[in-house]
Image 1 (cartoon, rainbow, N blue to C red):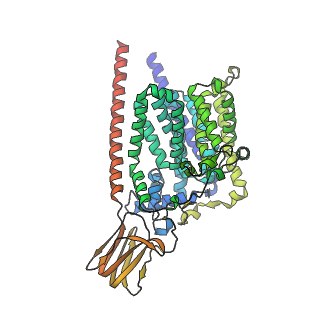
Image 2: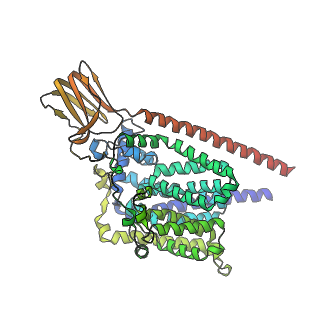
Length: 568
């Protein structure tokens, strides 16, 4: 009988999983159907052009055998934009591969977003289950989180691919910090992996989550002082994270030391100017529109959970308290003007904190709603179905509000529209250009001073430019390539060439001086720090995988011993 029961439970779990994943896939499509799929049209979100340019640049690199590009040669129409270094491509490879196998830009983007939606539901479910061991609660969390209004605004209205990816991986980082503070701290690698993925998704969100971790550690400082080994493993997790992201982090710092970039100029945004009043956020949620839509569900749940805080356990009380804290920081109630000259100003828009508010409220709601509802109502039977229906209605009307809005109508474009992307869409701030840079060159041209110098057989293949020159006098050659560290130049023949330097007029391009006769080759080789950093990250990844394998092997052995003891 016990064998039959075991087999029945296994089949039940299997069918439950199939049904759950099937629903997640349906929701992944439904979430974007009216704005990205219906009539083969896409709503042009605020950041869509920039992220499509990132995908196109990665596709171009892969097509030319450059599998780990640092420079995007699609953006700036070939002049080279270092976005791949400062905005890592690690998690957008699937979209580029979809283009490689033949999908159009629009098709690849839509399929990619469906993938991200699906993985968001799946990761949310398993992350919650790994802590709470409740299928129903984990399922409810996945629904609340995956269909939350702020996430919808990221996916549909803003096309904020970085935050979309951050939403997907944030639960992993949260589970990691919970394991270190309250659970098996030897599983520190969960936090390491989560923070690495956050870094590669959206560095601003990774920074915001670091603030979350700092507040969380302060709230639990007594436990950490009492059990010092937990703090030790937190430090280990931080060091491993830095080493894992070294392949991007160290080269970024190198470029920032090499020359001044736009992002190092005076900030374009100040938190005090981009924060909005509480009533404005409520109005946006009520209308179910806009780019910073926290959503009525989160507002209502936050109020209910705050009122019921005394009934919550220790962790959930902390999460509700931090939700209120981060929400207030997003409003004009908080003195953001005091942060104008602080590192916090890099967040640019305080409503970015809504990702923390959304996550925390959804987590606590999924964990406690059943207990907070009076037992007479028997919430077991209707809580999840009713929640799903309400969330589907909310999702439907959010899309319909965008579709019928005048702005939305003007921003709906057919798939074919995206076959020719604007290569000059570098994001609002164009942060990674040299400070003071101006667009002035064709990517296949060359400025020769003096003009009498003869240049023949000029050719460009991806990031390599070659030409033959005959210079009777010292001649300046200005390449249509934005000046970054890592470019190299070589001459074959009797001629000579100088080191590459930044051109002053037109400002920000790469220039060299040649003399005599020779064949010149100009290309992006990368830097020593880039190469060393790559191997640091690779070595760390291998060692971490080995550690995880050893830990799992040890746990399996311990479980076998326990089973044998029980049988005896």
